Length: 257
Image 1 (cartoon, rainbow, N blue to C red):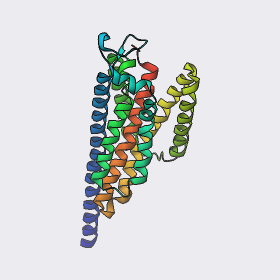
Image 2 (image 1 turned 180 degrees about the horizontal axis):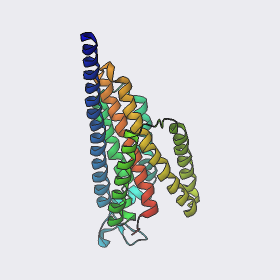
Image 3 (image 1 turned 60 degrees about the horizontal axis):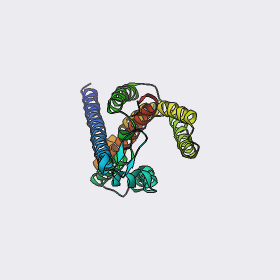
Image 4 (image 1 turned 180 degrees about the vertical axis):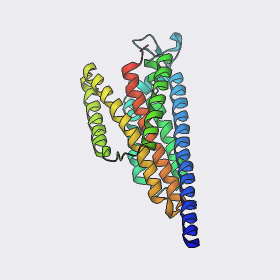
């Protein structure tokens, strides 16, 4: 009987250790994601400030009455805008290819550089939408993201089957968005934005459960370096879910200047 009690005690202690480790892991994921979001917001706001100018020193005027500086003209009206637009996408693929060769610290630094590049890429929203609507949509996205992520973390239902369907949806969205760059169809943009919100809402719950399950599957190995990089990858996935949901909601709900 004593042997059974000792075994139960060891199993209970291991379970407590895993629970504590999971909480620390998720805190690392959300903390890293939050820092990335702050970097993105600051970069976008700073770049948009450099892009605007007084009427007397402006190089160009936008249709909404705002004036662009020389830097703004270069950033938003020359072929450089295509580089800025697609750079974050290229960096995501590069990050996935390099993650096994990077240290945990190197992966975290790469993520923060990526967050800065994303900020530059979406800085145009401060020129196109009112500050109030940007803040309003950000709050709506934050509430939705928190609820969806909480569902993914707490649900007992296995939602791993959503993955392939949602990834196919993301690929379809990218193709449709590239096509609509040339078509400039408001109806297609509305459909893309609506589907985008639904797809990234699903990915938020899916990725949260995947991060949790990945930790539980590998926690007994005790590889802190691997778990550190897994936390960065988890932060990147949730960051992308949030940013994309925010951008699509902004297209649907945002008030333009």
